[in-house]
Length: 387
Image 1: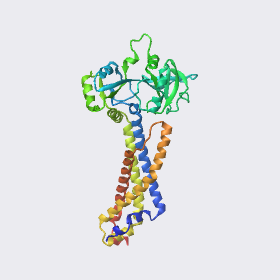
Image 2 (image 1 turned 90 degrees about the vertical axis):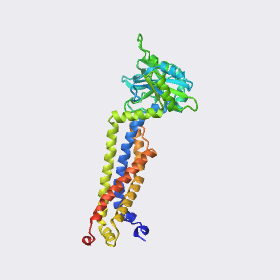
Image 3 (image 1 turned 135 degrees about the vertical axis):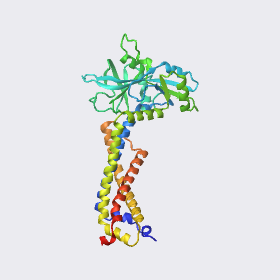
Image 4 (image 1 turned 180 degrees about the vertical axis):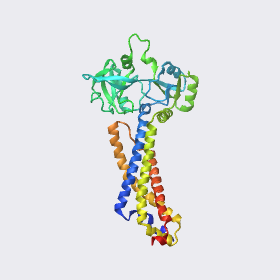
């Protein structure tokens, strides 16, 4: 019977010095926190860019063929929705309008701020959020709005339920609120009716009517219709100035846009890699010092006939034990950090199971690699020289 099958040598060699163990856990847990935070920022940017898309209750979305991100206003002719309504697979079609740079000024304040203005027919059930559905009837009264209460604190507390202000050039009252969240480009969302949208943005004498151009078409399909297959059929039947896709596909395309065309993905991706290598160096230094102190014990194992493969297996187990302890210590701090950052930025930070698994795998890999590198000192040692 081998020593490894009767004695938890990897565990004992790791925990024999409690003070050093705590220092090791703290160092690796810091790396876990750093990687989790970088990953949290990266996905907070991605998630915030699709908040409105995620809130829509749709099987299919119709957008301009030029539209690859949500925020830039790239509308298409409203008549495309009427054409889509003629297909038997389509049960209902609802338009959503967008003005990305609408201005708001609270009554009595000189400062004007930019908001994202979203408009729809208050009788259309296009949103999943129960807060919006329960209050959207209030928007039937002209010149009223619902405000996103998760706005960043740049409005001096003036943009909230009950406030009266000037939206573009029209007096509007905020009659309720809902929770959605800002993104990197705009601090607040305002929901209004299509009538209020038209009154606020229509310029007298202009040939352009805001309601004739739609930003997103929300399509509901009959039961049993394959959304992906019908999207291709519908797109081929309509003029090529629009395209149809599922919310999941549109969400993926927006994420791709931010990855390819914005520096955010690269910045936080590099931060994640840097966090990994910081943890690798911390872990290596801790384990190397530990192995040097225990060099006589490792030399004894070699002297009595244990092969190098056993010492490497021992190193792998030590690394995994350290990673697990660091994850247990680091994840609660990461969750607390997420809540703090969410409160400060208004962005949505979520440590999903998939993201937690990514950090866990990175931490285990980091500790195992560092442990293997550190163990080479013991592998290369000559028992005769040690003693």
